[in-house]
Every structure is written in structure tokens, then in C-alpha cells.
Image (tube, helix red, strand yellow):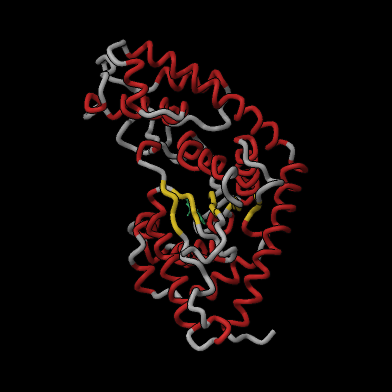
Length: 344
Ligand code: TRP
């Protein structure tokens, strides 16, 4: 039995260069969930500063993500779109969660190990505590469903562990929670299949990444039609024709990636695409992929650039979203303060 009302929460870091991977892997899922769920989408600027950010770039990256959300079809009136730092309750609950989570739990987080690299002593304390803030983001709304990529699964498990331990530690002797359903729900990941993992256009074995030094390795959401077309035409391929069955893509990561992109943009399976293009030469498929990608992304990019330039509009969306988010987060925090035993 689900005792909590369903609520979707997710976050995107404003760290620049939003690309096709972010779009297909996250933003399109956020858009689709709006029809069936109450949704809160957060630009997680407090997470961004766990590694160094130039203040002026951070500001424009926050507006970039917000513009991308709206241009892609997220409705900030029906749902909530805001930036994390405007709702202080996230940081407040994160502190309490820092006192619930165990050092041993955080020591197991693989993303920290990757991001901190060899020089762990020099990583920020915030980077280490990143997962407790992420748990607070979700649980301050008592959200139940979290669309995330595979790479965030471990953080979501930690959020469940924190919710569970909070419920166990604080509610045991509290008559108001004698029904045993707990105060925080255990949030579930909504993980998209591996089919939407978008790889670099220059190397099919690497994920498409904002930090790849080659801009040709990725399609940025803000790219215009000509740039998109050029990048797809230049994308690495192999000399063989496209296969007609999935196993023919084995050992051909670049072909596999481009077929996957086509499938995701059309909301079809890779097999559907191979049945359409299999046997034909690669250039026929690539031309079709150019047309499809430009048709789907160029309008979003155009709208995104327009919105991004309209600071007054974007900032008012974020402010309005933050006001509505704060109301909900504030209600949770009042209850949490009572549960923990603070005087207020
Ligand atoms: N860590 C997530 C990422 O890098 C971003 C994030 C922060 C998030 N808080 C969240 C995602 C809460 C889902 C829910 O992708």
C-alpha cells in the first residue's frame, strides 16, 4: 500500500552546455511525467557549487537550464520549476540528514570517488555531503518518484536509507506516528532504460559529456540548425551498411549510438529503425538523422535562446516556483522540527 500521495521530484545541475544526452536522458522524461503526476523540477545550484563555479557563469547556467525546461515543454504554471538556493529549507533539512547519514554510507558513494579523483583531501566538504543534500531535495517535499539516470541510482538508495533511519530513530516513541507508516516516504527511482544513454559523436564508447573538449562530440540544446546538421554529418561511423537486426550493432558503438538517438527522438525502438534503414548505406540513414534531429531540436534551441535572453521572464518563473516550493517545504520543516524536538 502506498501511504503517500505520488509526487515527482528531480533536479538538474546548472553546469553549462546542456546537450542531447540531458535532453533524451532526463528532460523528455520530465515532460512526459507532467501528464500523470504532480511534478517539481529543480535547478540544483547548491549542488553546482560543490565544485568551483564562476559566479557569472553560474547565473547564466541557471537561466539556461530553466529556459531548456520551458522550451522543451515543461509547464511552470501547472507544475513547479525553481532554483534550489531560493528555498532555504533544502539546506536546513540537509543539515539534519548530515546527522542521520553515517560516514560509512557516504564513503561508499562512487560518484564522490570519481569526482574527487586522486586529490581527495582537497575536495570540498560539500562534494562529500552532496548525497545528503540530494536526499533533502527529494524528501523536503516528501516526493515518492524520482526520474534519474543510472548514475544516480546509488544516491537514491542513500536517500531511502536516510528516510528509513530518520523514521526509525525519531518516530519510535512518538504517539502521533504510532500507525507505523513513517514521516518520510522511501522515494523510488524512475530509471530510464540503457537505450537512451547518448554517447559521444566522436567516440561511441564514451558518454556524451558537457566537459568533452571537442564541441563536435555533442549536440548542445542551444545549437542552431546548421550546427546540428554539421555535427551529425561529421559524426564518426564505420564503413559498413546498417544491419537489419540488433545483433548486427554489436561491436559497432558509433552505429549503435546513432540508431539509438534516432529511435529515442522518434520514440521508437532501435529494431524499428533497423527495419526501416537496415541494408541501406550509412549516408542515407545519416541524412534522415540530420533531418529528424534538426526538426526536433532546432525549434527547442531557438526558443531556449530566446527565453534565456529574457532575464526578467526567466527570473520571475524561478521566483514564482520558489514561492510555491517554499510553502510546501516549510510545512515539512515545521513537522520535522517538532519530530526532532526543537523548540519553535
Ligand atoms: N545529482 C543529480 C545529478 O547530477 C542532480 C540532483 C540533485 C537530483 N538533487 C536531485 C536529481 C534530486 C534527482 C533528485 O544528476
